[in-house]
Length: 126
Length: 141
Image (cartoon, rainbow over all chains, first blue to last red; front, side, top):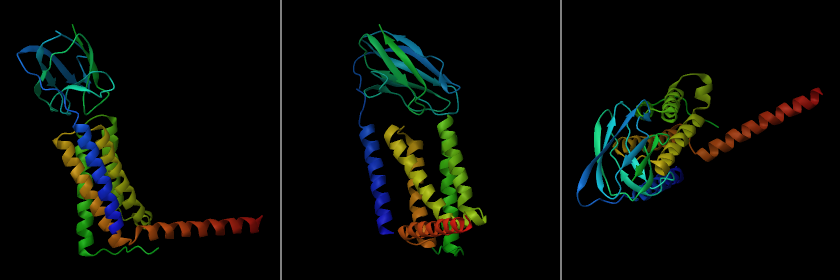
């Protein structure tokens, strides 16, 4: 019995440490002036806005409108491997959220919902 | 293998808690949308039923249902640890699943005893049944 509990304890510990290490990859905190940015809408388990164009080189406020009772967010990464986060928005249900995105260099960036990884889109900074 | 099938008051409390926690995490997963979460929720509901249903076969293999549900919950925890998302509802669901695993382990220990002995006993029983069937088959041939 003790051995079983120990095994489960170790599994739980491994899971928690894995979660902590994943969560440790924090996006950069933007500083300086912030301009108003685009709105991304989620509905029917998909982003209605899958391609967004923004101005490069300036911080911006991204508006996210989740129009359904299922939790979603907008998480922006450098590319589709989702290894390097740029801005992780709050997970909301039937609500609007705002997130500050740090100035992007010209190029294409990947965004997804952290709850449903098949919900994806692209942000193009020009 | 001798599993205890009669329930003492504490066993009933533990079993109710197991069903409650299982349905709790099923409900949370059902609110997340998407095929994967919905299937996960259905899996938990099925397991909650299997834990208490008074069918002969379910009672006979309750030990396996306990181990299966522990493995199912542990897999859900590990999958979440790998891919997230890390937010309040997820933490609640994972806390429920950890509590569920602990209660299932306690229930297993109270009802079935040592899991290694249980598995060994079941394998021996299966081996002897298969051996008997093979012997009957060759005698009939």
